[in-house]
Length: 255
Ligand SMILES: NC(=O)c1ccc[n+]([C@@H]2O[C@H](COP(=O)([O-])OP(=O)(O)OC[C@H]3O[C@@H](n4cnc5c(N)ncnc54)[C@H](OP(=O)(O)O)[C@@H]3O)[C@@H](O)[C@H]2O)c1
Image (tube, rainbow, N blue to C red; front, side, top):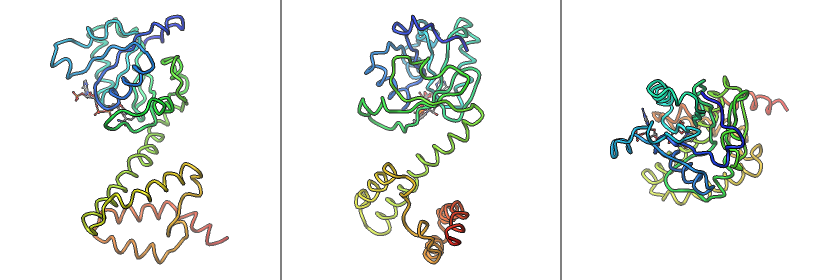
């Protein structure tokens, strides 16, 4: 990975965005809003126009590799071995779990779905980089986002926590919405105030946000719930959550 361009060049810096998936669409939109100069390359674009990555990225000072995690390292290796002049340029990727000498990791702590977000939201996204390597401020000196750095060897752990909090919670809500509608004939929308209040409680005071039988240590209800989930893969999920609270429950019962 090459050096990050000198500060004097930052205002005129051109970014090369690789990929056209969810992350690339959102961050390209954000970069446009912030007036950053960008060029883009994707496989789709190549299939349509025949323009190669080396051609599309020729004037990019920094290359932002926004492809699927498994493709990041092979893609960089392929470009830099076929066009060695690119090896001199700095590369960044946005995976939470990957740490590679080929590109600095700048993980945006956000879920990028369909549709663009409000401009202010993009500015509030925290980017998590790697200690001892060029950080968000060096790659994007003009962007205002909060930025942090963690040790490279802890990225997989950090990312597993993000996945549990951000993605697994979605699976739980999809389960509730789905069962409400299919089993009980209750529209999913009826549960939205519940979801919204939980989000507010978590934002206001996360440590006090847990309610229900787990918070109360109501063993009888917990056991009843687990029996009711017999034959459902979510029974093991429920049991797993109860297990995570084990020591606290024990402590609670002895105080
Ligand atoms: N989405 C999020 O919420 C989110 C949040 C934080 C970080 N990230 C990170 O952002 C990166 C991209 O994720 P995403 O959500 O944008 O994924 P995505 O929507 O699935 O898009 C993946 C992109 O990678 C391209 N790609 C895959 N393999 C390739 C290859 N061998 N050569 C060239 N291009 C290839 C795809 O091209 P084709 O369409 O041609 O397959 C597509 O443009 C990942 O590192 C991910 O960890 C995503």
